[in-house]
Length: 481
Ligand code: NAP
Ligand code: G3H
Image 1 (tube, rainbow, N blue to C red):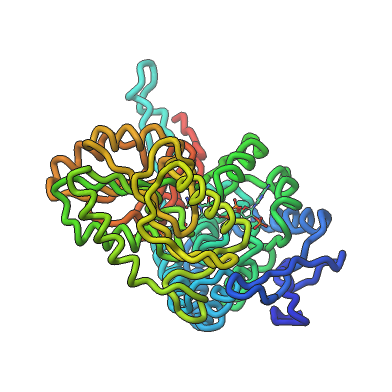
Image 2: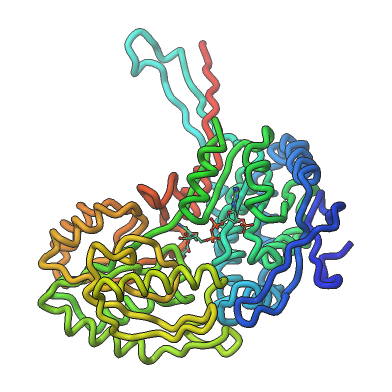
């Protein structure tokens, strides 16, 4: 069977064959723009998921035995095939997750670049050699060869908001290092994920080296996570899902990239025009549905009025509408997520927040809402909104901002806006986050930089080089001469 629309049902990939689920059940994927059914993906049965994992494990030894340069060549061909499908995949990303077409196509292009960089970087992995004589009682005649070997079958679970990029950023490092992959795409975004896999098949993927499991995570998730043939898990998604997965998976490495509550800390000496521009773009791109979105502003009282006015000015330029209308703010992924954002806005208003800009509320389409004078008793001060609302907290000084950041449960990124680099470094040292951006919005790229969250924002490190590292373990061979 081909991967094509067949009464809108897209098959899953099993040993390089496109298959329908024997149970005949499917999950419908509806466009966030207008609720139309974009397509359906198989709700795979437990037996089919079991078979997918076992048949991936069956080819692990063969794949691991291939030469590194062959794996690298496969990834280069994958990037080429993906680029050829930019229009098709871009249109599907837009339909499934409601990103504008230019952002959707941009995601495909960024992914091709990421795969190529991974194909190159993966060639440079190497182990080490240790002489025994550094330790008392041992001598140079004892030598260790530390090799880097793959874990085995990697389970890659991706979120809806980058259905192609955050899937490939797991799959490519796994494959280049000789791991095989079971890929579980987010249901909303699964068709885009399947099209991305089609590009890999077109590139010459050997049968079984990557298999796909589709179906709701709440239904098949625990089964696949705890499957005895899974050797490593790499996950991006919500904190509660990630924590649940980490508890279920036992005795295998788990890399987690989770939620965030990234602050933008604006000091008295900041360039306020630049700060406002970066904050609005950082907070509201893709309607705030990014783990790295700026999710609260902490601004020095003395410049707060001016900054808020500039933020308002920038927000008023944004258009609100469907992704097909190329609007800046597009509908949220589903009604439940929109309802949650509205509940945060209502709670803050009830507790005295000032509404600087009020966004429209039309089903799952929410305009940008900017809330000033947000205080600690408001839920929006602490909870991850993952939507187009930006809380502004006024602070006396940087110590207050540092304290607010350190008391929050997340630790993904933070931005500091100031002209005083020495101050920026001092504050950065005291923030408990994975990355601090100075005079720029919080964001993941460039994709070869390490990317990580601490506290409830994650475990382990991604970014091309670090993702490759995470896919390998040491294997030690000791020579006793
Ligand atoms: P999610 O609901 O946690 O889903 C993520 C993935 O986990 C999906 O593929 C989902 O499948 C699957 N899943 C759900 N339950 C599972 C289970 N019991 N076992 C195994 N897999 C399971 O997250 P999302 O709504 O897609 O994304 C939004 C969240 O992700 C936000 O909190 C955001 O901050 C975070 N995020 C973090 C990063 C980062 O790099 N730090 C990047 C992007 C997003 P289904 O789709 O079938 O439910
Ligand atoms: O949603 C989480 C992504 O890792 C954010 O990536 O900063 O490139 O939008 P981004």
